[in-house]
Length: 133
Image (tube, rainbow, N blue to C red; front, side, top):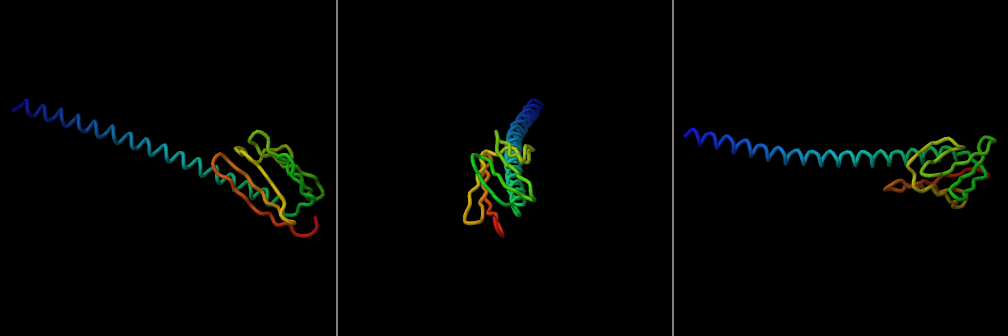
């Protein structure tokens, strides 16, 4: 009778061990997915924030030109350059956003379309230009 209780105890411990290992693997996978979705969401928010910054910069800009990843414009009497070099978007040499894979701008009539792409997602925003250029 004692041997049967001992075997039952060992079997119970082994079964609980197998269940705990399976549960820990599932929890680790969930944690990895959560981190991945967090970094993706943070990257998307950074791209949206960068587009809003560029839109704000171009609201009263004049003489807007885009050539070879450099957006040149004049605002408040001063010339500015917004450029992409090795995944870093900078304004007049100061970094405003990192992790950018591509940056593009093109005119549609008097308005401009700004496009930024990160690792997985691209965002586009139309900047309405009012008044004379």
